[in-house]
Length: 191
Ligand SMILES: C[S@@+](CC[C@H](N)C(=O)[O-])C[C@H]1O[C@@H](n2cnc3c(N)ncnc32)[C@H](O)[C@@H]1O
Image (cartoon, rainbow, N blue to C red):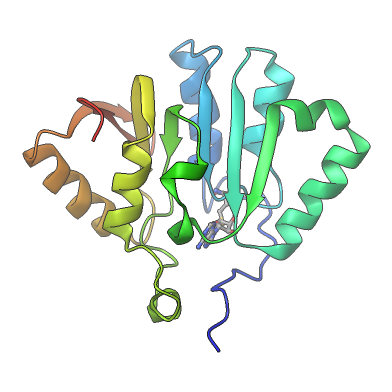
């Protein structure tokens, strides 16, 4: 029987090795984003995006996903100890490649920093989405400013580049620009 392709690591914040989450927080501040509904792929055990958005009191709310049991355990501990954080920051345990659009709200900003990093034949074994399908599903949930952010420091950034180039050619996405290690696109219309 196929098992869920979990990521059994509890990732601590390491800005030198993986600065995407910190760059994203700086981007939100630099662009003055407020009251945004944010989907965040890969919370880390540090939960820095959800936590700092909460602490900044800018009205940005975060829906994160992690495939790491210890990272989700840490989220449970966090919101038990600080229930006010749980109001603005929700974390789903699961495989992003099993999302179903019918079960998701719309988002102003979607972060997809880890596209291509974890998608293997283990996901195929239970009929999970491909990278391309997952990106299209989440782009299809964009509203408002309709922004999607990728991370050019990812070892699988070629996958994001390939998918965004195709979607740009199709007229679904348009490049907005770069912010530190982030590459930002806007969906032209609902995909
Ligand atoms: C290297 S950590 C990076 C965490 C954080 N974004 C950072 O840069 O510090 C990778 C993250 O992706 C998550 N992840 C890995 N595979 C996943 C999957 N199939 N679905 C959802 N999340 C996944 C892990 O649980 C973890 O939170």
